[in-house]
Image (tube, rainbow, N blue to C red; front, side):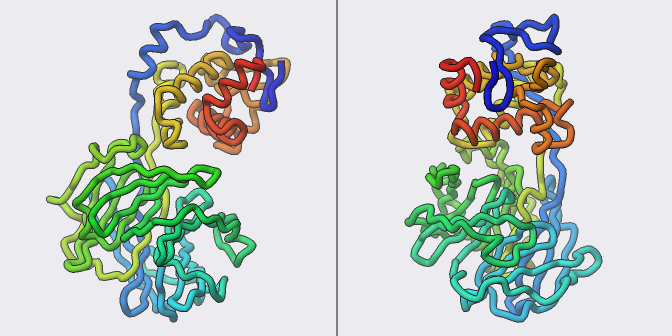
Amino acid sequence: MYGPHGPVGPPGALLAGAAGAALLTAGAVTQATDAEAATTCTGTASIYGILPDGRLTYSAINPSNGDLTRVRIGPDLGFTPKAMATLNFNTVLVTSTTGALYRVDVQTNNTSLVLAGAPVRIADSGWTHDMLAYDGHGHLYGTTSSGLLLQYTVTEDKPAGSQHIGMRKEIDSGFALKTLTATGDDRLLATTSGGALYEYVISSSGTWSRNDLKAEGWSAFDQLLSPGAGVYYGRIPTSGAMYWYKDADPTDKSGADIAYHTDDPVSTSGWSQQLLSAQPDSYTCTTSLDRDNIAEVKAAGRDMMNAHDAAWANSSEWSCLEKLWDKESGWRWNASNPSSGAYGIPQSLPGSKMGTAGADWQTNPLTQIKWGLGYVDGRYGSPCGAWRFFQANNWY
């Protein structure tokens, strides 16, 4: 039988390429939720800022220990900034107090901070946001003085105008926030004047949910930053100090596991920028695992499912995904159907479709899971939506 993404045999059928390996036993399924794969985190916290005199700055922090490793000061931008968001390593968006939007292109920030040219004005008006944050996955968020949260779709690394930053969507009102940053795909972190720390998760339809990470204690910060992987930075304007925090599991909807490094700050002074913005996903954590160990593969799959959409981070959605890919492939990276070309854990047809998630799609179960989660999300909205369809049709 053929689904829109590949062939699916009757429930319980073994796929070619998995010969001699039956579907998981009950014992193996039980072990899957307890298995832990090794996690390796790499990268640098790359932070751009703007000094009160209008000069652009670049700072690099080692996220594993909070050590400041580089500071560079560049030229005056030539206009009065109001909000900023870093798109990538050498592209920063900055709004002016007059509502204009500029693209700042950085040529290098190694031995000195040099721009590739004067800031490019890509919108003359309308950008009156108090704060901006880019999630690293195509969505730019902004808040207004009235508390409205807006979402824009960014389609180019170096946008030239509304043709590259558009699809304006009003998420909701009531976002009276003191700070705002992005921590991942459609995930925002914010503080309030009362000191609460909130996480917001925005769905593909524009609905949102809020996780209350901390009820108090975060009121001193006027800038909040995240390079990804659950690392957060807060700047105290009165002293210019920068503190760092590590959320052990940034997808668990809880702030109970946030480690406070108050006795070892990034700096106790010197952070005098009026605006700061971290490059999204400049610090990432990857899971290494034995690809033939189904328990480890499932454990990694559940972590990736939780991270993909916070609304899925529960036992019900996991049960649906687990059963779905038990039927499809037994969670084996090399499961294949030679008659059609369907391949991998989610049984992509053809298998090469998974190349959009990574060049190693033929051998890496994590790449296959990443693609499969995107497919499930885009077509069914959730693992349980996909599982219900599978139960009714024997394919998904």
